[in-house]
Length: 277
Image (cartoon, rainbow, N blue to C red; front, top):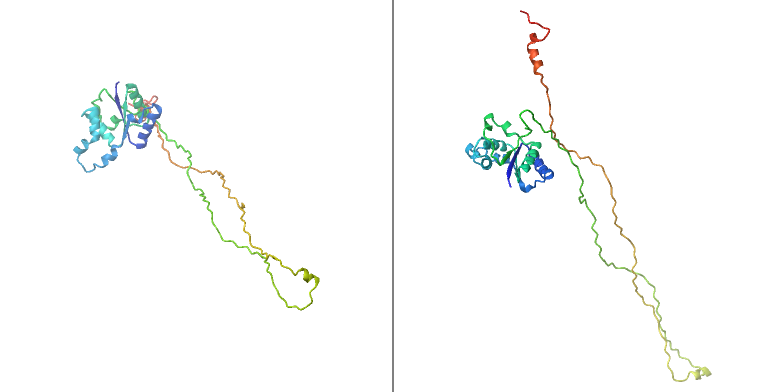
Protein backbone atom coordinates (compact mmCIF):
# COMPACT_ATOMS: atom_id res chain seq x y z
CA UNK A 1 0.00 0.00 0.00
CA UNK A 2 1.46 3.31 -1.14
CA UNK A 3 0.75 5.90 1.54
CA UNK A 4 0.90 9.56 0.56
CA UNK A 5 0.56 12.80 2.46
CA UNK A 6 -1.52 15.71 1.14
CA UNK A 7 -1.09 19.14 2.73
CA UNK A 8 -3.48 22.10 2.37
CA UNK A 9 -2.80 25.52 3.90
CA UNK A 10 -5.78 27.85 4.45
CA UNK A 11 -5.93 31.49 5.48
CA UNK A 12 -9.25 31.12 7.31
CA UNK A 13 -10.24 28.49 9.83
CA UNK A 14 -13.76 28.21 8.44
CA UNK A 15 -12.34 27.19 5.06
CA UNK A 16 -10.17 24.52 6.70
CA UNK A 17 -13.17 23.14 8.61
CA UNK A 18 -15.23 23.09 5.41
CA UNK A 19 -12.47 21.13 3.66
CA UNK A 20 -12.41 18.52 6.46
CA UNK A 21 -16.18 18.12 6.30
CA UNK A 22 -16.13 17.80 2.50
CA UNK A 23 -13.40 15.14 2.65
CA UNK A 24 -15.54 13.05 4.96
CA UNK A 25 -18.92 13.60 3.25
CA UNK A 26 -17.83 13.46 -0.40
CA UNK A 27 -14.95 10.94 -0.48
CA UNK A 28 -15.50 9.22 2.88
CA UNK A 29 -12.05 10.09 4.15
CA UNK A 30 -12.50 9.72 7.90
CA UNK A 31 -11.14 11.98 10.60
CA UNK A 32 -8.63 9.30 11.56
CA UNK A 33 -6.80 10.16 8.32
CA UNK A 34 -7.17 13.95 8.59
CA UNK A 35 -5.33 16.33 10.91
CA UNK A 36 -6.20 20.02 11.30
CA UNK A 37 -4.01 22.51 13.14
CA UNK A 38 -3.66 26.26 13.59
CA UNK A 39 0.07 27.08 13.71
CA UNK A 40 -0.78 30.79 13.51
CA UNK A 41 -2.02 30.80 17.11
CA UNK A 42 1.05 28.88 18.24
CA UNK A 43 3.33 31.32 16.38
CA UNK A 44 1.80 34.21 18.30
CA UNK A 45 3.28 32.78 21.48
CA UNK A 46 6.77 33.13 19.98
CA UNK A 47 6.58 36.89 19.45
CA UNK A 48 9.87 38.42 20.64
CA UNK A 49 11.81 35.18 20.32
CA UNK A 50 14.72 34.80 17.93
CA UNK A 51 14.38 33.66 14.33
CA UNK A 52 16.42 30.57 15.13
CA UNK A 53 13.87 29.41 17.70
CA UNK A 54 10.98 29.94 15.27
CA UNK A 55 12.73 28.02 12.52
CA UNK A 56 13.34 25.08 14.87
CA UNK A 57 9.75 24.79 16.19
CA UNK A 58 7.35 21.92 15.52
CA UNK A 59 5.97 23.51 12.34
CA UNK A 60 9.32 23.69 10.59
CA UNK A 61 10.20 20.24 11.90
CA UNK A 62 6.99 18.81 10.41
CA UNK A 63 7.61 20.23 6.94
CA UNK A 64 11.30 19.39 7.20
CA UNK A 65 10.40 15.75 7.72
CA UNK A 66 8.21 15.83 4.58
CA UNK A 67 10.31 17.91 2.19
CA UNK A 68 13.74 17.78 3.75
CA UNK A 69 15.67 20.86 4.79
CA UNK A 70 15.17 22.82 1.56
CA UNK A 71 13.30 25.81 0.19
CA UNK A 72 10.01 23.91 -0.07
CA UNK A 73 10.04 23.22 3.66
CA UNK A 74 10.79 26.88 4.35
CA UNK A 75 7.98 28.07 2.03
CA UNK A 76 5.38 25.80 3.62
CA UNK A 77 6.54 26.69 7.13
CA UNK A 78 6.16 30.41 6.46
CA UNK A 79 2.71 29.96 4.89
CA UNK A 80 1.52 27.64 7.67
CA UNK A 81 2.45 30.15 10.39
CA UNK A 82 -0.08 32.55 8.87
CA UNK A 83 -3.08 30.23 8.72
CA UNK A 84 -4.45 26.71 9.16
CA UNK A 85 -2.97 23.39 8.00
CA UNK A 86 -5.03 20.36 6.92
CA UNK A 87 -3.00 17.16 6.54
CA UNK A 88 -4.52 14.09 4.82
CA UNK A 89 -2.81 10.69 5.16
CA UNK A 90 -3.98 8.94 1.99
CA UNK A 91 -3.75 5.19 1.48
CA UNK A 92 -3.33 5.42 -2.30
CA UNK A 93 -2.37 7.86 -5.01
CA UNK A 94 -5.98 8.03 -6.21
CA UNK A 95 -7.15 8.97 -2.73
CA UNK A 96 -4.37 11.55 -2.50
CA UNK A 97 -5.46 13.14 -5.78
CA UNK A 98 -9.06 13.26 -4.62
CA UNK A 99 -8.01 14.88 -1.34
CA UNK A 100 -5.86 17.42 -3.19
CA UNK A 101 -8.80 18.36 -5.43
CA UNK A 102 -11.05 18.86 -2.39
CA UNK A 103 -8.48 21.05 -0.62
CA UNK A 104 -8.02 23.14 -3.75
CA UNK A 105 -11.77 23.61 -4.19
CA UNK A 106 -12.11 24.77 -0.58
CA UNK A 107 -9.54 27.53 -1.00
CA UNK A 108 -6.12 26.11 -0.15
CA UNK A 109 -3.46 28.73 -0.88
CA UNK A 110 -0.83 28.32 -3.59
CA UNK A 111 2.41 28.27 -1.64
CA UNK A 112 4.50 29.05 -4.74
CA UNK A 113 2.58 32.26 -5.37
CA UNK A 114 2.98 33.47 -1.79
CA UNK A 115 6.71 32.72 -1.69
CA UNK A 116 9.57 34.37 -3.56
CA UNK A 117 10.38 33.25 -7.14
CA UNK A 118 13.56 31.53 -6.01
CA UNK A 119 11.68 29.47 -3.45
CA UNK A 120 10.37 26.86 -5.90
CA UNK A 121 13.57 25.28 -7.08
CA UNK A 122 13.36 22.02 -5.08
CA UNK A 123 10.36 19.73 -5.53
CA UNK A 124 8.62 17.58 -2.89
CA UNK A 125 9.58 13.93 -2.55
CA UNK A 126 7.71 11.21 -4.41
CA UNK A 127 5.33 10.35 -1.54
CA UNK A 128 4.14 13.92 -0.97
CA UNK A 129 1.39 15.66 -2.92
CA UNK A 130 1.32 19.45 -2.79
CA UNK A 131 -1.98 21.33 -3.27
CA UNK A 132 -1.98 24.22 -5.72
CA UNK A 133 -5.14 26.28 -5.78
CA UNK A 134 -6.62 26.44 -9.26
CA UNK A 135 -3.47 25.43 -11.13
CA UNK A 136 -4.37 23.01 -13.94
CA UNK A 137 -1.65 23.77 -16.47
CA UNK A 138 0.66 26.40 -17.88
CA UNK A 139 -2.00 28.00 -20.10
CA UNK A 140 -5.14 28.01 -17.92
CA UNK A 141 -6.11 28.91 -14.39
CA UNK A 142 -9.26 28.16 -12.44
CA UNK A 143 -10.48 30.36 -9.59
CA UNK A 144 -12.95 28.60 -7.26
CA UNK A 145 -16.04 30.67 -6.50
CA UNK A 146 -17.20 29.80 -2.99
CA UNK A 147 -20.40 30.79 -1.27
CA UNK A 148 -21.59 30.07 2.24
CA UNK A 149 -25.21 29.13 2.78
CA UNK A 150 -27.20 29.64 5.96
CA UNK A 151 -28.87 26.40 7.05
CA UNK A 152 -31.62 26.99 9.60
CA UNK A 153 -33.23 24.07 11.43
CA UNK A 154 -35.34 23.43 14.49
CA UNK A 155 -34.84 21.59 17.74
CA UNK A 156 -37.03 21.16 20.79
CA UNK A 157 -36.07 22.73 24.10
CA UNK A 158 -37.75 22.75 27.51
CA UNK A 159 -39.50 26.02 28.29
CA UNK A 160 -41.23 25.13 31.56
CA UNK A 161 -43.88 22.82 32.91
CA UNK A 162 -46.17 21.95 35.80
CA UNK A 163 -45.30 19.76 38.75
CA UNK A 164 -48.25 18.30 40.64
CA UNK A 165 -48.10 16.59 44.00
CA UNK A 166 -51.17 15.35 45.88
CA UNK A 167 -51.35 14.87 49.65
CA UNK A 168 -54.04 14.17 52.27
CA UNK A 169 -54.73 16.86 54.87
CA UNK A 170 -57.09 16.88 57.82
CA UNK A 171 -59.23 19.79 59.01
CA UNK A 172 -61.63 20.05 61.94
CA UNK A 173 -65.37 20.18 61.21
CA UNK A 174 -68.41 20.90 63.43
CA UNK A 175 -72.10 19.98 63.19
CA UNK A 176 -74.86 21.07 65.62
CA UNK A 177 -77.60 18.51 66.59
CA UNK A 178 -80.62 18.68 68.92
CA UNK A 179 -80.72 15.48 70.98
CA UNK A 180 -83.63 14.26 73.15
CA UNK A 181 -83.33 12.37 76.41
CA UNK A 182 -86.02 10.74 78.64
CA UNK A 183 -85.91 11.12 82.40
CA UNK A 184 -88.21 9.36 84.94
CA UNK A 185 -89.81 11.52 87.61
CA UNK A 186 -91.00 9.67 90.73
CA UNK A 187 -93.48 11.29 93.14
CA UNK A 188 -94.80 9.77 96.33
CA UNK A 189 -98.00 11.40 97.72
CA UNK A 190 -99.65 10.56 101.05
CA UNK A 191 -103.38 9.72 100.84
CA UNK A 192 -106.04 8.40 103.26
CA UNK A 193 -109.01 6.79 101.51
CA UNK A 194 -110.83 3.48 101.55
CA UNK A 195 -109.29 0.73 99.38
CA UNK A 196 -111.15 -0.13 96.19
CA UNK A 197 -111.34 -3.32 94.19
CA UNK A 198 -108.56 -2.03 91.90
CA UNK A 199 -106.42 -1.38 94.90
CA UNK A 200 -107.02 -4.93 96.08
CA UNK A 201 -105.99 -6.27 92.58
CA UNK A 202 -102.66 -4.46 92.74
CA UNK A 203 -102.10 -5.49 96.29
CA UNK A 204 -99.59 -8.21 95.46
CA UNK A 205 -95.89 -8.63 94.92
CA UNK A 206 -94.38 -7.80 91.52
CA UNK A 207 -91.77 -5.85 89.53
CA UNK A 208 -92.12 -3.08 87.06
CA UNK A 209 -89.34 -1.96 84.68
CA UNK A 210 -89.54 1.43 83.03
CA UNK A 211 -86.77 2.37 80.61
CA UNK A 212 -85.34 5.81 80.03
CA UNK A 213 -84.29 6.58 76.41
CA UNK A 214 -81.97 9.21 74.95
CA UNK A 215 -80.66 10.27 71.50
CA UNK A 216 -76.89 10.16 70.93
CA UNK A 217 -74.92 11.48 67.90
CA UNK A 218 -73.93 8.95 65.23
CA UNK A 219 -70.96 9.86 62.98
CA UNK A 220 -70.59 8.34 59.51
CA UNK A 221 -68.11 9.46 56.78
CA UNK A 222 -68.84 9.42 53.06
CA UNK A 223 -66.17 10.14 50.43
CA UNK A 224 -67.40 12.31 47.58
CA UNK A 225 -65.60 13.77 44.55
CA UNK A 226 -65.90 17.54 44.79
CA UNK A 227 -63.38 18.72 42.14
CA UNK A 228 -61.36 17.42 39.18
CA UNK A 229 -57.96 18.69 37.97
CA UNK A 230 -57.43 18.21 34.23
CA UNK A 231 -54.08 18.80 32.51
CA UNK A 232 -53.87 19.11 28.75
CA UNK A 233 -51.47 20.58 26.19
CA UNK A 234 -52.11 22.91 23.31
CA UNK A 235 -49.65 23.91 20.60
CA UNK A 236 -49.12 27.40 19.30
CA UNK A 237 -47.10 28.32 16.23
CA UNK A 238 -45.19 31.55 15.74
CA UNK A 239 -43.07 33.00 12.97
CA UNK A 240 -39.51 34.04 13.70
CA UNK A 241 -36.92 35.54 11.39
CA UNK A 242 -33.36 34.22 11.74
CA UNK A 243 -30.68 36.61 10.58
CA UNK A 244 -27.01 35.94 9.96
CA UNK A 245 -24.19 36.66 7.57
CA UNK A 246 -22.67 34.44 4.89
CA UNK A 247 -19.58 34.91 2.77
CA UNK A 248 -19.02 34.36 -0.93
CA UNK A 249 -16.29 34.90 -3.46
CA UNK A 250 -16.80 37.94 -5.63
CA UNK A 251 -14.70 38.17 -8.78
CA UNK A 252 -14.23 41.34 -10.85
CA UNK A 253 -13.00 40.78 -14.40
CA UNK A 254 -11.48 43.62 -16.40
CA UNK A 255 -10.82 42.69 -20.01
CA UNK A 256 -7.74 44.36 -21.47
CA UNK A 257 -7.27 44.97 -25.21
CA UNK A 258 -3.54 45.45 -25.71
CA UNK A 259 -3.88 46.29 -29.46
CA UNK A 260 -6.29 49.12 -28.66
CA UNK A 261 -4.02 50.47 -25.93
CA UNK A 262 -1.09 50.44 -28.38
CA UNK A 263 -3.12 52.38 -30.97
CA UNK A 264 -4.10 54.98 -28.39
CA UNK A 265 -0.44 55.51 -27.47
CA UNK A 266 0.64 55.78 -31.18
CA UNK A 267 -2.25 57.39 -33.08
CA UNK A 268 -0.01 58.08 -36.08
CA UNK A 269 0.24 54.36 -36.86
CA UNK A 270 -3.49 53.87 -37.27
CA UNK A 271 -4.73 53.12 -40.82
CA UNK A 272 -6.06 56.20 -42.55
CA UNK A 273 -3.75 58.52 -40.62
CA UNK A 274 -0.48 58.61 -42.57
CA UNK A 275 2.44 60.13 -40.78
CA UNK A 276 3.65 63.49 -42.02
CA UNK A 277 7.22 63.47 -43.29
